[in-house]
Length: 95
Image 1 (cartoon, rainbow, N blue to C red):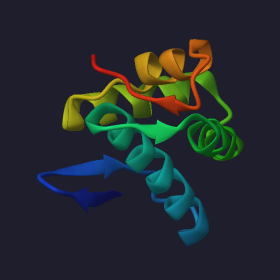
Image 2 (image 1 turned 30 degrees about the vertical axis):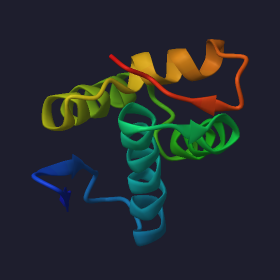
Image 3 (image 1 turned 45 degrees about the vertical axis):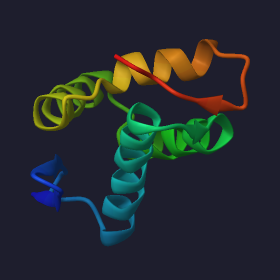
């Protein structure tokens, strides 16, 4: 299952509930925002924690990340690495 965003679709799992799809989509949107402008670090970190409650398996996270990057051009891994290492209140990743 996928959700359209601009000219591509978010990778989603068809077994997820509507609330889970909304949570994961929100996380993807924040990754996009961090790459296109900037996002509050606390918001991004909180969204990632919520994402991990839905996608706890590292292998599934990596697969979704690869699909998201292929579709959007944005790396979840590199964006989150930047968020985790910055001391600033806002995250802006230029990959």
